[in-house]
Image (cartoon, rainbow, N blue to C red; front, side, top):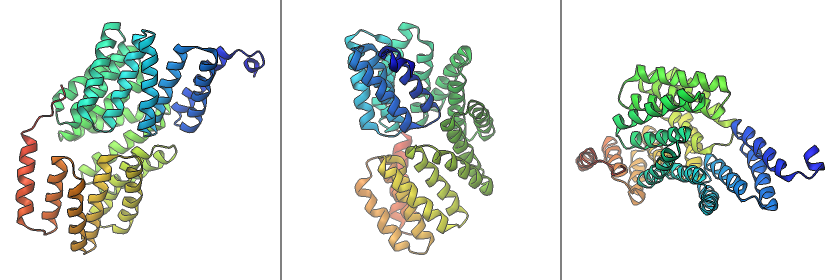
Length: 364
């Protein structure tokens, strides 16, 4: 109130950004967006281009976390242009990394790595240790998602070392959780669980709701891998409940569809159908390709489980029109074969999976 009274708009802009940061940390995205927009408007009014870029960058990250990717790219490109004109290389590195993160979330792996490599090179030149860690973490995620597990582990551990050195507990927890994801994919479940629980403990201590939900979801997935069904259902419910406390439809869509998988496994078809319906609708609304595909396959599985194999086969066949990747085609053939659509689908799935195993994504 004092700063409004004396018309200190420079200080007001910074206070607005601080309030935006506090609300973002608590996952109150609508409130955070309002404060960041106030910060931007004040920066424009006083002609502070440096702070305009900062506020635009904040809005870009916020919209990324809210799965509004088109708006996020627009904010970040505007921020990047300003910092390029001002020769602010630290800002350029930050915005470049954040654009790469959007490509990662959209599963555009090559584009993501291009931006991450650019950001990492600048961060290393400037000695930005925290920036280096963030880039390494995201590059590790890309390597993990494309099956290059040893490289992913190496990148995560480098990032963990930096975060431990700097005392950045949230960043360290994120890297530990991601390391757990790689161990789980490699079948090293005990190591994965140790990572997940360490990451969850840190998130709980920090009160970071998004981190809590993500680590709960990882623990649920691990319990599902072990076929500990009741414990997995409880863990998924905890994660879903946490995600519902804040506006993250991107992650909530995954949690719902993953819990539906467990319900299918234990024969709770009605609950699985309700979860699938909500999760698929959310995935489609935020254009999340992976869980839109998984949700549609799951819908066909539900039809087959309820005895309508003809409808299930029809739904899967219709999905070939929108299958854009070899892995998707392979899975559709595999699912069709499993519900009795014929030996040709098994052979097609085998050939496509063989092709995938021989292919290494060019993301270096």
